[in-house]
Image 1 (cartoon, one colour):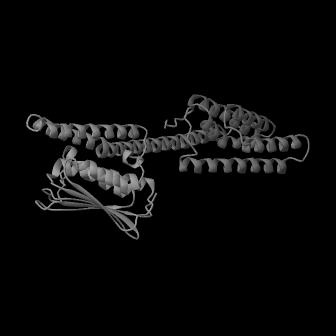
Image 2: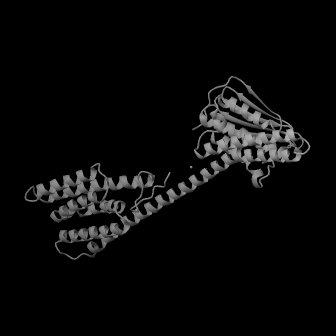
Image 3: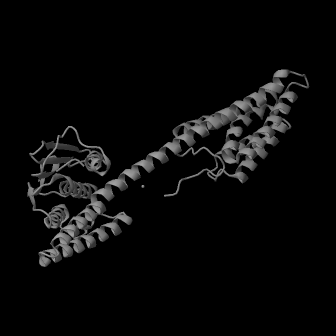
Length: 384
């Protein structure tokens, strides 16, 4: 052997996805707690300063209605928000001390509405807060009453926008990582299945072309073998498109039979032996598929780079792991200096990536002129 994954969820209102982002969930919990704390404190203040007369029953009833509306298990959309804001405004007209409940409502409006509509709502709530504070001051002009509410509104909006941008950056990072992982998966699948079949067909057809005049029977055998490999590659491509298991596994018999069929198919170009050591055990589908892909990729390396006259596959079941060995008698190479150029540099990294995804390890023993042994060990209880 020689050297060698749905639509994105897009917020339609510029909303922080509190279900996905931990920071947004934490901020939502804080705002919900602040709303009920401010609502309770405002109600206590009103009852302490005003006797249980006249407006008292109305204020208590509206406070209870506002609390119930806030916790109703309904979609947080425009009708719900409009009802909550309307009840709050009536409450503020009756009892200005409830004005500061607007701060959590800033956050709710920003989460629910589109950006421009949310800013209009924040401005409207701020005007109500300023008016309520002036009423509490009995008309006395205090600059703090004019500056503090807009400043609080600006801070609340800034906190929300910061959280939203953090969530968007997190979502963008996750999308990029997902794209990179899917690209790696696709490249490994193509390298270990379709590329291998195309390489085999090319070599067989080249051999048929060289012997067409001198040995027509041998040339026809090469062509028939290439056609058989092309048929298998077509089945692989169809299963690849539908994200199914490798075609060799569809024939039944498990991993052992699939590796045996793979060895027989590769033997059309050079002898490939196969044996099983130890009592077989049932392996998870993802382990079975990965080991078959590893064997396919390893034999592709042997065929293209090693100049080997024979190879051997050995599947060994141990107490705590399963081991796949791929050995060849080819030219070998310096195991510590694997080429990284072009396609030659993809096979071993792809095999290593597959092994590591299953909690396993890859070991390569090779030296110039002494062949190569590739060994992949996968724990029988690999992490999911």
